[in-house]
Image (cartoon, rainbow over all chains, first blue to last red; front, side, top):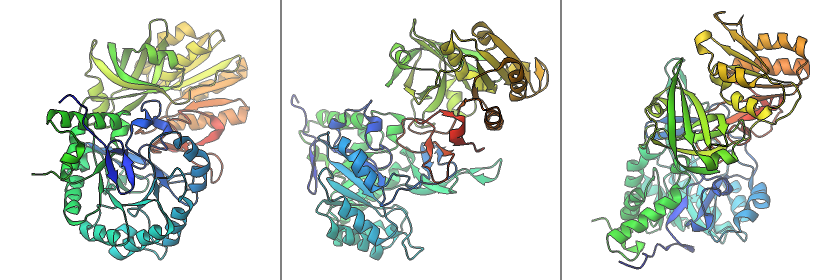
Length: 304
Length: 258
């Protein structure tokens, strides 16, 4: 095949020049990786999880390397939405790339307020992180309960004209029911998956290695789990899926696309190879060429 | 910032499981300053997954070479030690904020492998008269002794067991030197208890002091927020060791053991 394959995909209202996005929390606000990556070549940039007020994040050790993976317990450290709009968004607007803001709240009101504040020029979508903290009433994690997951997404949906993406947790018994709940609540797309809860122990001191005791596992170690979840949800829910979890190469990304993801996000791989996003996009293109396919659309959900 | 595969010119075995790598990386060397670090991939597979941050031990801008020192601590550094001359190693850098070069009579204090970034610093501080205090558990652990002897106006040695030089801890020896020499700047790198002692000493003597810290890192570029360090001052955001540091002013940070 002589012509370059068409890598463009559409996620609800978002037009991506290729299916490769950055996973929230692994790419800062873009500028951190600008020395290594031409940001204009990314499908989309998903920025660090943003909250209404600045958050300091967790104390103590935040990172532990594990076999083919890592645990993190950053604790949503971020400068807050106002700082983001004043100091990070202007720089991001210079690039011809959709900017997606990952949002987290302590309450449904906070999610609603964040979505409303971010319903502005330069923000293409919000990615609703319901795979993180506690509800104000205490105890329940939003993303592990269909009713609360739906309530958050419904509130965000009402507050914004932007594309609404729900980022789901793998730490649930039945992800399909959560996916259906957020779809019914008005989500335009799904991000699958957030990190898997895990822990590591120092047997010398007999203490947990992470300051927060538990943290989120990411990296190649989680890829089979992520792939399975994407496949399960893709079969059951008619929303576009952004697949993520341990994608290191173009081949990894192709697996997610075959499983039914419309786009993919590269996370932990950025830490290993700062050019991972671009190399994953190139790898997808190469796979298409090798298989005489003219468009990435031909492999989305094309599992035999 | 630069990232790519660089040619390993030599990998030398030093005492106490320490290895010295000499790499050919002219683009990186041109950009690098004393106190900065490089982020090194230990192998090609996924275990270990993350890069290892290693401080720049020495820069040779004329030949475009840099020297790294590391100790074999685990799986990653063990893999790194298997590279041989002629192999290519994936590194990125220079990363982080290096040392501020100031003072007329700087005193450098290095404990154990904490001496590593201080050699590049001693080079950079020339032609000032640099005094170095190096500490180790015993005489065998005095890494780069002769290199420091070449570039420092004064070199003092402390060993915990007294097998070479002063018998005791390096900062205690350093404190004795202050009374005699009137140093006007302190730079230190080494174990956290040593750095904490030096923090207090610099405050007591009212002499500016910079510390080079070590932390577990993932990205190395300020994106993942994994390598934080507690700032002095209530409610201030955490400092990132990778970009705000690894070199900090002594009063900026509160040091914790791991």
